[in-house]
Amino acid sequence: MAFMLIHGDCANCRHPISYNADRVPSLSLSGKRRAICAVCFGEWNRIHRTSKGLDPVPLHPDAYAPLEVA
Image (cartoon, rainbow, N blue to C red; front, top):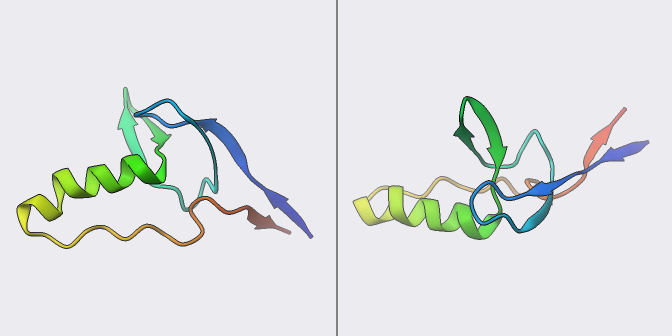
């Protein structure tokens, strides 16, 4: 059994993060998907969803956990 975890910087705040590429929330910047941290995702939800009376987009529970690979 093996696990994979990707390390990079949040596309918004630039803080280092480790994430599961299949589950992490991301933004499209210049045509490429870039991962964002949980704090920035919460702020995105506040600005684009809850402030408009919409339900927040849920954060996947494994977004920042290692991905199990066969």
